[in-house]
Image (cartoon, rainbow, N blue to C red; front, side, top):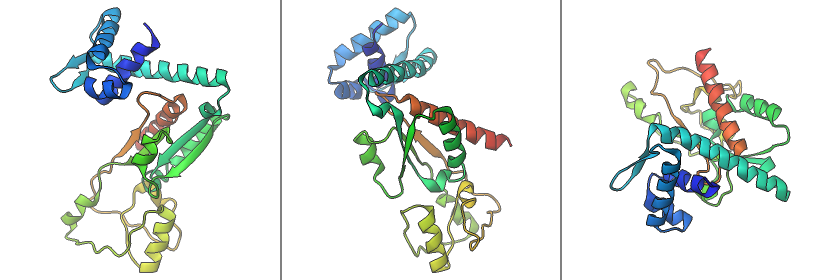
Length: 242
């Protein structure tokens, strides 16, 4: 088993298609399919369920996918350390402050304690183009909003009138609320960062939950990004249980 076999498998699993993975890897589809099949034969278990236009992971494939990502991440880190590249010691995180404002400080503190040599670069996704940054390889970890909670507003018989568009983060949003004597829907985490001049009131009944998505590089896993994502999920679970 060679690292290239792991890269090929991870690419197919991440994109859910031999065609898309082959284009990214600059291989022909038959060649890529043959390499993945050789890997399955060596392991002795099927990793993928092949459909007409897409593939999905088997139970064994799902487990092996996580292990393969970790092996690739460690291999890339070892190469960067040998070459003396500082990139392995920098974690570039793009996030939406309004979604995880209350969680991020705790995760940052835990991550820095566990990996003091890693420098973190934070990018506010509300003021930058997330797709552009990710496609250019300028982000190692992306934390972005998922489903909007706005769909729950009609149940309260309220028709919102939008008075201002804010895309520079929660600090600017708070200033806009005061300037316009307006209201905004905030996540629970961002309430802890509100100034005392603003007041938070809960919805009753509660609005639908808003999801948060975490994106990690598929072909070039970053071990620091994997660690940060795990710590973030652990902090969310801890707060839910308490």
